[in-house]
Image 1 (cartoon, helix red, strand yellow):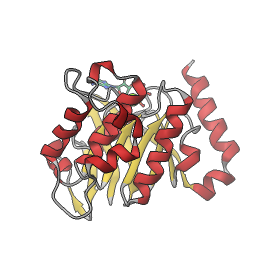
Image 2: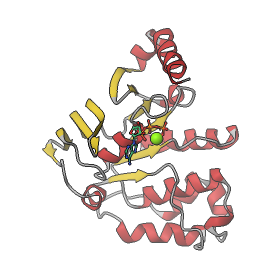
Image 3: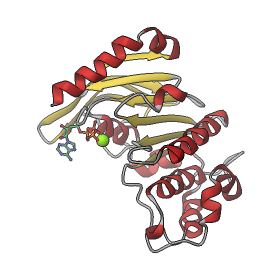
Length: 239
Ligand SMILES: Nc1ncnc2c1ncn2[C@@H]1O[C@H](COP(=O)(O)OP(=O)(O)OP(=O)(O)O)[C@@H](O)[C@H]1O
Ligand SMILES: [Mg+2]
């Protein structure tokens, strides 16, 4: 279980997160939504150990991990897939996947390369293609596959479906369901609820660095209008 407790984060003198609290458990899918600049990426980077909270606590399995390194978080099973995916352009799909196994955690039931290729058959077809030759969707699948090979307990994904064709988005949604069914917790960032409402267990909406709404599937269903209006209003505020 990974939790943020009343987290404040600053860039220099500018406070960007204000008292953010929420958590993700094994096998749980949490959607983190909000308009441009709401603090979604900052929140994910904090959870991955790239940013240190000025106050509040980052809790992993009951213990405080505020201020640890990203390498530490990765070894503890927190995998971060950044928005720009960071595929190695001059390595093949196969080599990109092999590299992930270097930083692989030890433990039972870790994902294998064969399982990743089964999860994303498109990657199996593209095994010998170079990173730079991949489409955006293939790169995203590769980035997720690479993260899985490190043996994550929690996967943090920044706008994984942004700009992708609907058929690819569907493949990624199916993969997320399977990953969660295998016990991996997920926090994924989106700007709207089109994808999250198909698979999320819990929803967190950020605005100006604060959580302005959160709820589970039932609460989301009951508050659909409020949530939709809230996100739409947030969009309008920005314009
Ligand atoms: N390195 C930085 N230095 C200073 N300010 C930053 C930095 N990165 C982000 N910010 C500011 O922090 C706020 C939150 O940014 P963040 O990237 O977390 O938002 P976001 O919700 O991910 O936005 P987007 O939807 O555009 O990806 C914004 O006001 C942004 O301008
Ligand atoms: Mg962002």
